[in-house]
Image (cartoon, rainbow, N blue to C red; front, side, top):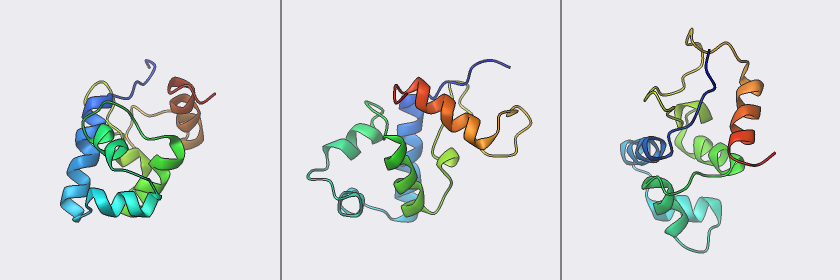
Length: 104
């Protein structure tokens, strides 16, 4: 198994697609997350940055999906729990993502 990498651009497009499908506007996300402006959210949508782990969790709660359903890896696969190629536990994957994103 190789080291899993989050594809920032594809993840941003996936977040945008899920928001659009659920009717969640940028303004609703901004208010829910108590952001001062919309630019952070647009950066996520365009793949210029990724949400922090806390913001991924909040966004998943708002959208009613798991954090893993927001993520797309560098193979273009949405990281859905239960896939055979995932031998890491949920907490191990979160640790890998946090390390990769520079939070640890």
